[in-house]
Amino acid sequence: MINLQLQPGVTPYNKPVAGNNQKPGALLGRKTSDKLSFSSSFIDRQLALKFKIIGDEHARNEEHNTAVFYYKKAINTNPDYVQPYYNLAKVYKKRGQMAQAIDIYQKLLKVKSDEIEAQSLLGQCFTEQGNYKAAKIAYEKAVKIDPKYDFASRSLKKLENLMLAATNPIKAGEIKQQIAKNNLKKALQLVNQHASPNLTKGLEDLDITFDETDSLAGHKNIAQYENHNKKIVITSDYIWSAPEITAAYIIHEAVHAKDKDGLTSVREEQDAYQASIEFWIAHNNGVKDPELDYAAGLYRENPDKLREKVGQTYRSRDKSIPEYSPYHIPPEQQGFFSRLKMYFFSVKDNYSSSTMPIN
Image (cartoon, rainbow, N blue to C red; front, side, top):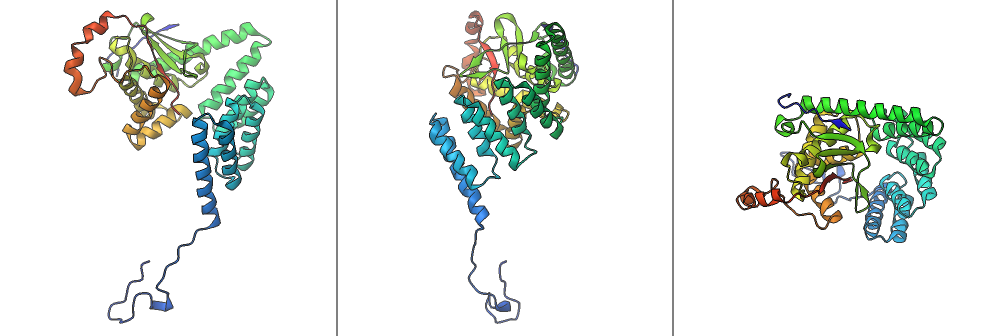
C-alpha cells in the first residue's frame, strides 16, 4: 500500500462544350447510360460484414453455435477481414474451448503476421493453458512488433516473473513488490504534474495499492474506489503496466473519491471516464493500451459517444445502478438533489465505485 501524495496546485459528369450542339454523352462517342459495377472483392467484404453482424447478435444472445457458424462464414467469405477471427476466438474461450481459440488466432496470424492484438491474445491463451514456453514466444513476437503496445509488454513481464517464482519465489516476490512501488511512484508523479488541482485537492491522505479487485457481471474491475477505507485499488494484473496507464486509472477513481459520498451512478462513471480519457490522450507518451485507446477513439470521434458507451455498459452490467448521484446530476435537477445531500451523507455506503472494461 502506498500513501497518495497528491499535491494541490502543481500543476464525370458529361458536360456539353460551349457552342456545341451535341447532346451530353455524345462527346467522344460516349454512351448516355452509366453502369455501376461492383468487384467480387467488394461484394465479399459486404457479405463478410453481414455475416459478422449476424454472428454478433447471436453471440450477445448466448447462442454460441449459431454465432460460430456465422463467424466462420464471414472468415471464409473474406479471409482478410480480421474482426470475425477475434469474435470467434472470444466465443471459443467463453465456451472453454481454448485449443479452438488458439487455432483461430494462429490462422489470423498466417493471414496478417503483424496483427499485434492477435499475437498478444495468443500468448494469453497459452498462459491460461499453462504452456508458459509458448506464451513467452508469443508475447516476445508481439513486443517485437510494437514495444509500445503495453498489453503485450506487461503480459510478458508478468509471465517472466511467474516463471521465476517457480524456481525462486522469494526473489520473484521482491521484484514484483519493487515494480509495483516504482509504478505507483511514477504514476503519482504524472498525476501531481498534470492533473487539475480541482481534482487532487483534498485527496492527500488517499491510499493507493495494487491488489485483487472485485468483479461485476463476470467482468473484473481494472480499478475501484473503496469509500469505506478511502482506498484506490488497481488490479494486480497491472503491476507490470506503464505508469501512464496507472495514472489514468488513478484519475478515474479520484473522480469517485472527490465527492466523498460513497455513492456512484451512471453519470458519475461517465464523468470519471471522461476525466481519465482526457488525461490519457494528453499524457500517454506514446504508450498503447487496448481499453484506454478504445475509449479514446470514441472520445475523439465525439465525447458523447464515449458517455453513451459507458452508460450502456454500466446499465447492462449493473441493473441497480442509479442514473444520478448527489454530485453528478443535471444542472436543472441540482436544487432538488442538493436537499438530499445531507441524507446521503448520513448513510455511510461502502459501495466500491469501479472501472470496468467497456470494449
